[in-house]
Length: 42
Figure 1 (spheres, helix red, strand yellow):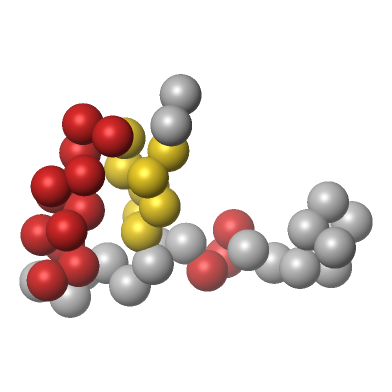
Figure 2 (cartoon, rainbow, N blue to C red; figure 1 turned 120 degrees about the vertical axis):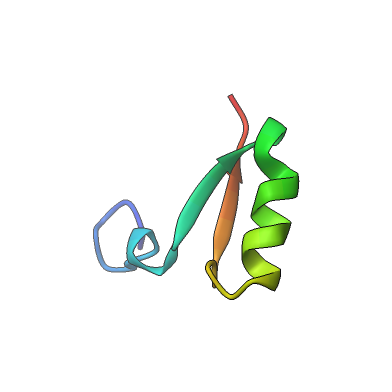
């Protein structure tokens, strides 16, 4: 469904973080700056 464009997941992500930024992601979540953060593995 995602590949067909019927499931809009990208719009649900509020911020992306690298693995090195995981602590910032947790802090942003605690501060209410981030609702749905995603850690991107490259």
